[in-house]
Structure formats: structure tokens, C-alpha cells
Image (cartoon, rainbow, N blue to C red; front, side):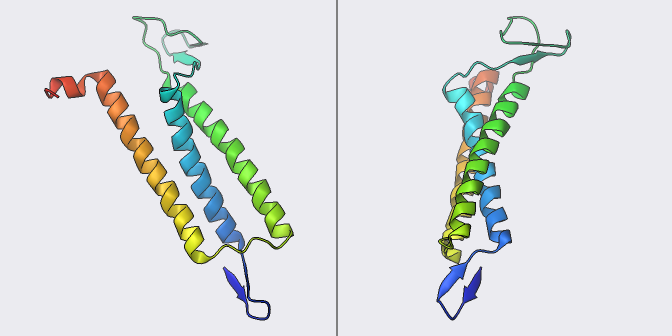
Length: 138
């Protein structure tokens, strides 16, 4: 952040904008990945033995749903990040972007918290599906 002493206005640097956009993308990707599990969003699955993508989950045939989930999470997070970028661009153009350093740190902390919670849920979800908790007697 640059501080302009003549007007007492805090002006955002480009590195601050990049930091905010990175935090938004990171948190959004984690959140949208979890949304695929929470809301049971139907996504294409890759069948490596057939070298094909299908919308159905065929029982007994090895498939990889992770690719579709990641593509959905990255695309949705990219859209959210672009919206934030355009929103920040408008604020920067009108010189209303006067975030304090503490606010930018809070943005990073919230993004990190979202990622940690989402990662915890992903582990819980996958361990439950794989039977890890059952094998431990939980």
C-alpha cells in the first residue's frame, strides 16, 4: 500500500490486487470443489481403460471423477476471480480502493481458513468413502 500524505488516502499497489485475487481464487477453488460433493453435482468422469469421458458413473468400471470436479472448481473460481478483478478495477479507477493493510491481511486469513476447512472436509469425505474410519473402528 502506498500512503499519500497530502490527501490521507491509501492507494492500492498492483501487488495488493494480485494478493487479493490470488486469495479469492484459492478460496473459491476449494469452496467450489467441496460444492461438487455437498450438492452432488453431476460432472463428466474419465474412464482411463476406454480413454473416454462419460456423464454416468458405471459401477464396476474404474473411472476418475476428480478431473471433472477440478475442472468445475477451476472454471467457477476463475469466473469469481474475474468478477472481483473487474470490481476492483472499477474501484481503482474511481480511487475508492482504500483498503487498509489490516483488511488485506484479513482477506488472506479468511481465504486460508476457507481452504483449511474445505481440505478438512475433503479428507473426511474421502476417508469415509474409502472405509478408513470403519477400518479404525470409528
